[in-house]
Image 1 (cartoon, rainbow, N blue to C red):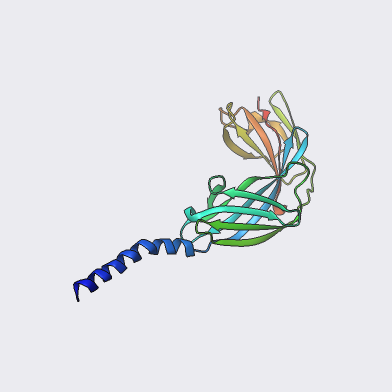
Image 2: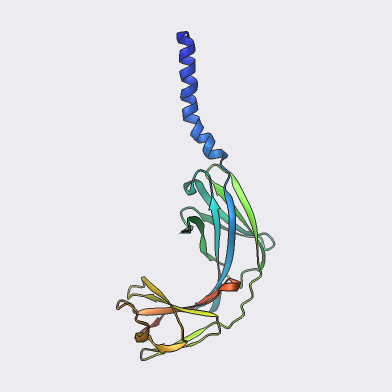
Length: 218
């Protein structure tokens, strides 16, 4: 082989090693394997506020670090929410990767029901799309909790009720599923660092939940 042909051969190999990773990244197609929307009711200053908890099961052959943006659209209402890789929540369960947000909301009124469209975009500009239908109807009144001298009493028709506990600085400590809607906090054997608790009521079958303000535990 002549020196000129040898140089050409090495040049081709060199260019291939440089550009092959770039081609691989830009040609990778993201996938939304599954997704869900859950309605979360919060106890706001002016009444009950609605938020969506929105997550998708995301895949990309180049890894999750190649994913860049996640969008949720309500085309009928001309609404759009953009969630970047810096802002989305990442949760791994059973080896599967979920990304999304718990803060989908509108400034005034309720979130629209109907068809939503999720769009996932990677750093190479490739995208995947999947539609969801959410027609959630709140079946139960917002729960109410009262506390008197270390005893709690809960007015709730929700199927599942839990206490989410926090320390004096507002840091999360633990979650306790309640078997009774009334009792003493001391009977729940909470960690000694717990100072406040919020009630998390849930209708798991219909993707609905309610979250109250915190109350003192003693």
